[in-house]
Image 1: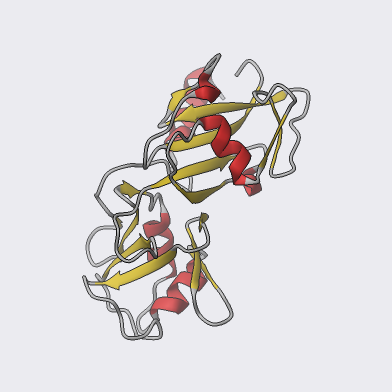
Image 2 (image 1 turned 135 degrees about the vertical axis):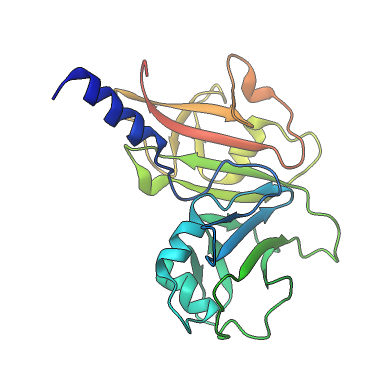
Length: 229
């Protein structure tokens, strides 16, 4: 195969969207077009549906219920009593809960049949009497090396919250004695050719970046990457 074709295939591969815990922001939902199911996943003002709408459309058949569609597509997980616990690999802190609306209304039952072209919005209820949601988001990105690590966790914002304090409070990160170096995340220790890299709102943190103070709706990404990549 020529080098020209190899470059073309590489470009096409890079254009394929990855699913789960999207880094997207904004208010626009995602859909498959036409009569496809439209999906929006909102954490505050952050849109985090990623490629989940595509998965819903692939799983959709006439007469399928809301809960059946989410389970069949793998987009969401439910507790034994039918409570929505996880969406697009996004987990919520205790006291927060997911709200589901179909075509702008809360469905009477998740066992209701879903019509073609339906619009689904899933958002976070802070559970504090309707006060505006002010969370921060921590994302673990295992990349192609450890994709099973990839997920997001929504945590409540507190005053004077720094990157370092968020990592310590998350219960997922073990820091070295210097309180700056990441030893392991979710009990995974990088191999000799791997390392953890930090970003806040898609901007790399360098040097004293762990001391950076965070704002509501900031997203900290902890990405596993190959060294010198």
